[in-house]
Image 1 (spheres, helix red, strand yellow):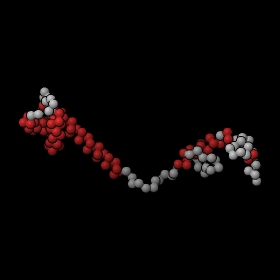
Image 2 (tube, helix red, strand yellow; image 1 turned 90 degrees about the horizontal axis):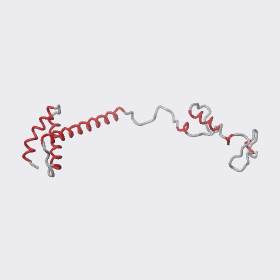
Image 3 (tube, helix red, strand yellow; image 1 turned 180 degrees about the vertical axis):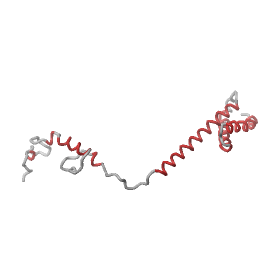
Image 4 (cartoon, helix red, strand yellow; image 1 turned 45 degrees about the vertical axis):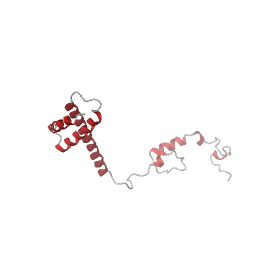
Length: 149
């Protein structure tokens, strides 16, 4: 790696980035990152156009830094406008998502849980005369009958 060449090219590469609209301090930072990359890459093989290589790498380093900064600002903005944690304005709808037996469900609730209740009413085990688990052979399933009372 030719340090003298890098020292000669540094002001020109900064000038190219400034000419492209990058502020001077940011251009210096991007060129510094490109010089670090050159120190890691060039000992094996120096490019045919060292200035072009430095300009390309410095420009990409600038774009990466600019995009990272924009993404950080966007995340910070989203956190600022996000409502604080706490109670919500909506009701707890967990019960509406669970399949509920008609005897357990709140009869005043309509909507999604109403549809679930209708599906349960159509379930074969809810039909009179069919045996249920528990060994009573369906005696309590007949209309008007109770469990041993």
